[in-house]
Amino acid sequence: HDYRAHVSVATGVGAMQTLLIVALMFERRRRQIAEQEAQRHLDNAAHLDRRATLGELSAALAHELSQPLGAIMHNAEAAEMAIDSGQPALLELREILADIRHEDSRAGQIISRMRALLRKHELDIESLDVNALTRETIALVVPAAAEKGVDVDMDLTSNLAPILGDRVHLQQVLLNVLLNGMDAMATLPQATRRLLVRTDHGDHCVEVSVKDVGCGIAPDAARRIFGPFFTTKAQGLGVGLSIARSIIQAHGGRIYAENNRDRGATIRFSIPFNREARPAA
Ligand code: ADP
Image (cartoon, protein in one colour):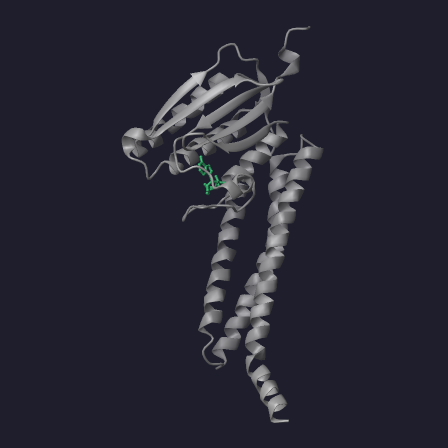
């Protein structure tokens, strides 16, 4: 029948395009799954063995990511060859390819940045005074805060019990949270940009919180902001909080975010006390 012939011709014309698009979408999904798996590995490793080195964790993540990245690149090249061989009007396909290329190099950047950040292989655990650590870290962001017109206030509880932790890695966590708070207030009038950093006793732990008056976190994003590659910033990589969470978990602590009642968000993390340093009961 004519009808059947027509259908089969139409199918033939679109087949190449459809196949390529399906293949590309399949690759995307595969990459998403690989990313989720990488985060699970990271979580499991941090949970099962708190002494696991962060260098090992980043190597595992890099390994998990490099396979789907290679496959995406392969597909992108194959699709480009098909376009260049004279098939007409595949502009849309080109756009998808450009997008995939962009994602690919972005993920590559993430890997190299994570490697650079975590080059220090062992956790260097010592007894730490969280207030001193907080003061030191705030001193590091004073220039950035001045440039962005942000007031940074401190409310540090005195006589906090010491914790066991890695000074450099914990500073990295706090630094990231402070810079995120500043970013969140970028569109506010300068006079109102303010961060409040608090330290306090928690349940067998010390808590550090950073409160801003910025844009706050969308209701569906409160948990996702700690996942890898989640970002709402044009230039963001979305790995800062993911690394922060791994570091805090490696210390046996917790990190979470909540919106303030009035405006802005508070990011809070806790680190268990150094039990050995506490006076015998
Ligand atoms: P990046 O800063 O590269 O985006 P992060 O992992 O540090 O990566 O942060 C992930 C996302 O979490 C940010 O893009 C932002 O959407 C959200 N976020 C983090 N901190 C805050 C905050 N204080 N207020 C509002 N949103 C925040």
